Image (cartoon, rainbow, N blue to C red; front, side, top):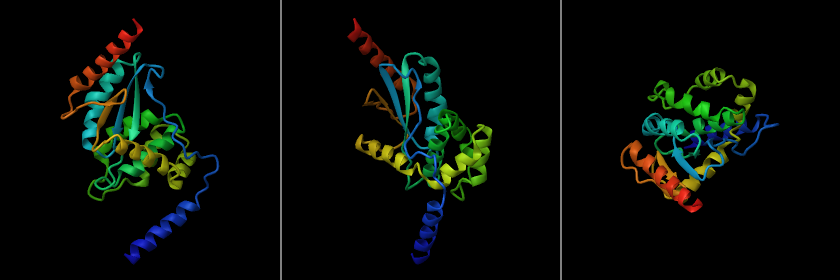
Length: 207
């Protein structure tokens, strides 16, 4: 216990020494699709979650392509801290990428490269994250200052708490206009029906 406290204290001291000039603690990630759409699909997700990776490929990407003009797609952080030790640092890194206009590109890359993570050691090496940032053509110095400072942690955890208030119990969890989608398996048709029903309701209101 004493060793843990010492390590934790050193980590906090190192974090405090990072220059945070010009960095923002707020989330700057934008929605995808039509930002003015009457229908919003919100996903609570965890970058280390295998089911989230599958949902990203099998559900989210097809829907983003098909409904790009009629639906707004929002991503919310929900790192499962007790079982996924990589989830929080990856979530923070994604928010740092968002500050440079590359949030959704980071999301795609994180899920594409999820299987490359060192699952046995339960960590993502700093060099891996740096490689991702390089591949996304980010300002590496700015990105590293952002991740090292952990300035985005509170923003990530605020979304996690928001999810808990909405009774999110696992990932991925989808909402359409604030209504949870009853998704027992990774079924594209179930999520799409929730979207088309919401679009039909909005169309009915306009008539």
